[in-house]
Amino acid sequence: MHVRAINPNTTESMTAAIGRAARAAASAGTTVTAVGPVMGPASIESHYDEALAVPGLLTEIGRGEADGVDGYVLACFGDPGLDAARELASGPVVGIAEAAMHVATLLGRHFSIVTTLPRTIGRAEELAERYGFRTACAGIHAVDIPVLELDLPGSDARRETTAECRRALAADGSDVIVLGCAGMADFCAEVSAELGVPVIDGVAAATRLVESLVALGLSTSRRGEYAKPPVKPYAGALADFGLGTGVR
Picture (spheres, rainbow, N blue to C red):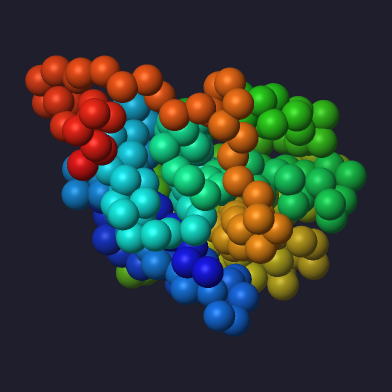
């Protein structure tokens, strides 16, 4: 089985961290490759970033199809381009926010999300509603650290994230923490050990869910919404994305 973890931003160090988290979670015998696009934002922290990350993400889906990939992890907590990726991919595509929230509900009555910047809280609220977990999600909190500062030498990101998770548990009365950024994957186990509650990294959760779907012989339904998009020409900088010519 070949699972591909796609980092929708262009920061190579984050792609490497995502790869480590996905490979650590994968079963023996599963090949995990982690890739990132050559075009798009360095990090995804706004609706603008999300919109401009999608073409690069879809390019990587197209490459994965050519490589015979069995399933995909979409490794950004905003789950950008998830619906479009499902239209293109022959195997299952699972977003890390979607996966983390599903897993959290299996481990406790309520979960809290701890993410990076306050401006991303609204998107997390939107996704909790979409995935049917608005009641289970007791609160969404931000450590106010930009994504690209999470793994800088000398960064206090781990300490500050742990402290915010502790505050979230107390404020929300929750049982489980969901980390709201793929860039937090490296310190998930440390936070869990210190707080004594399950802490969910969406990259690991999504990797296992993709593996399970592939093993069960299941993929995205092609009836209705997720059928292949109609073939039509695209113009300008997006000319190569017309499905008649293939997603580059």
